[in-house]
Amino acid sequence: EADRRQRQMCIRDRLTTGERQTAALMTMALLDRGIDAISYTGSQVGIITDTAHRKAKIVEVKGDRVRQSLSEGKVCVIAGFQGVSTAKEITTMGRGASDLTASALAQAMHADACEIYTDVTGVFTADPRIVPQARKLQKVHFDEMLEMAGAGSKVLALRSVEFARNHDVPLHVRSAFTWEQGTWVTNEEPSVEDPIISGVVTDMTEAKVTVLGVPDRPGISAALFEPLAEANVNVDMIVQNTSTEGTTDISFTMPMADMAQSETIVQRVAQEIGATGVTHDNDIAKVSLVGAGMKSSPGIAAKMFRVLADEGVNIQMISTSTIRVSVIMEANDMERAARALHTAFGLDSGAAYSAPLPERR
Image (tube, rainbow, N blue to C red; front, side, top):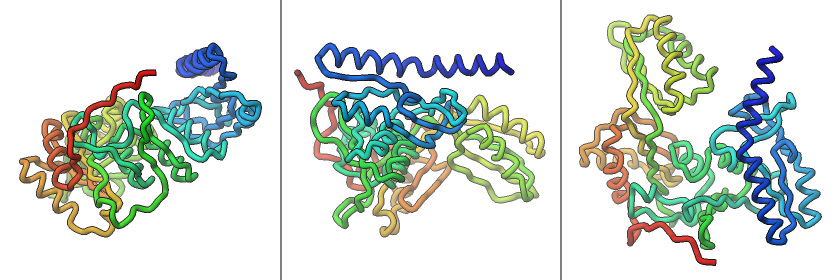
């Protein structure tokens, strides 16, 4: 047991090395320019998490040392993605946790806003690489940004937006290469003049699993999905077909990165519950419409389905919320579907998007 714990500690230290080195190098570069700076690790800052290593959740941010350094006029460079658990072990918080660290620190410091610098100039109505007519949004409500992030948008990490919304920390998403204003993500309610649909979100990182011939009786779904939840597998869409002769098929989507682990679990459970087989498909894509205006505008889903039908796109699965409609389709249909929906819902800009060049200094 002691050897196992020692190995885990070594792995955790290695996983956080990159952020620590970068923070130290950044601080050294600032010092070379005559800027008084200091670097901190997550544990030094007092980012307290639970004990779920690699997917740890923030419990508290103390931030006393940061406040002291700021009061002395220092620039604080803090390693993201990491913290220290309630059991006093180094933890990491998973993908996108640098954004989460920024949101949490902004809340702890009572900052007016949290600026997230990325390789694009803000949040767009679609991925400009897929939809050239995509345009930058000036503002987005937290709820819309949460749905976009959950649907597969890569601009902001889901947990960062969720934390910012819960603690009312305005986020400003802007480019690391230009000084232009980006997109503000806040709790400001949309006005009646805002478009019904804010964006078309595309995602090709999910896979579909289908369990065939599942006995149609109480408790089967729980027996299937509880082991996946215990393994921290995030299941997205779930569709259960109509029962025929006492059996049914259950299809669901999950991150492709979890497929290897999930397939073993699903195969085992399928045998235990008496299912006839398991299939999986990695060649799928998810396309989503997101917009706060959906709450008061009927017919959005119907229009979406008609546009896809006219494009010859077959829908495999459907999932909805009050401000989102998502569909699963073949991966080859994704670009055509996204462009058609973007145009049909009036999101196209007057000119095609071109990536901004870094400003000369």
